[in-house]
Length: 150
Image (tube, rainbow, N blue to C red):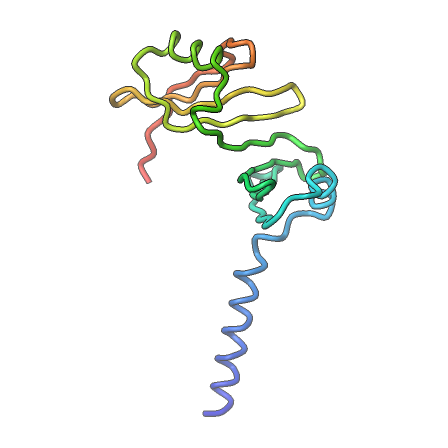
């Protein structure tokens, strides 16, 4: 009976270690590139985004961010949500002109090597869209969101 308790305890410890450290298996190159780009980041959590990309979720200056890196440490993108009142007037005017009657569900700033855009999830009735607008107010991406049946 005592050996069964020891085996059970060992199993529980192994399970706990696997669950708590599993999300922190980003390659060393990725972690180093992240630390260099975001030296003041706090509470970093890593997830495998896809076959070649890792995503870090973290806090910086009390704001929640996400950043994506390739396996070799190359930075791809950083995003963080913003409040509707923080959207520049020309960007919001462009959004409302091109997509009249849509409501903003979520607003983010997305930065890549190509620059910064404002990304929006907008909704009108049953239609949901993802839209990106640059700082000049030009729509650079728009797509209807597909319904998830999960």
